[in-house]
Amino acid sequence: MTRRNRQSHRTIVRLPLEALTILAPSITPLHRAMISDGFALQGSSSIHRSPHGTMTARLVYRPSPRASTVQSIVITVRNIVLDSQALPEPETVRAF
Image 1 (cartoon, rainbow, N blue to C red):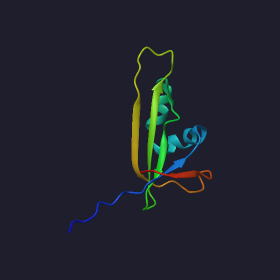
Image 2 (cartoon, rainbow, N blue to C red):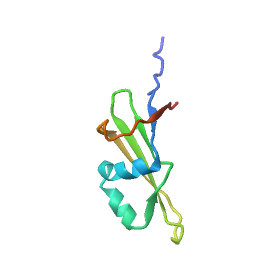
Image 3 (cartoon, rainbow, N blue to C red):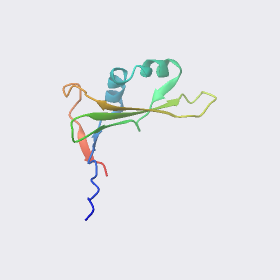
Image 4 (cartoon, rainbow, N blue to C red):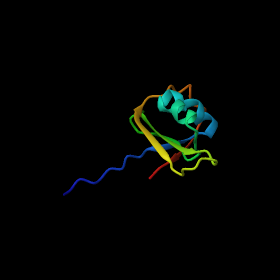
């Protein structure tokens, strides 16, 4: 018999963009540099909670509409521990 593949069962923590904007500087030091270079944090950014209690942040940055280049930069930070009081009451959704 083979072992059954186990799924990670991570959950997406639904946060509004305003909350992600407040948390982003504490997650990555690159946030301030991205903002000063004319990039904006996008609503497609998310935070995922693992069953072990750690979190993964996926921060998506796009340039302002008046920029000549069209590119997205995605920064993924794994195994972060955020203070539960720093997070507002989230609506969690199971990710498959």
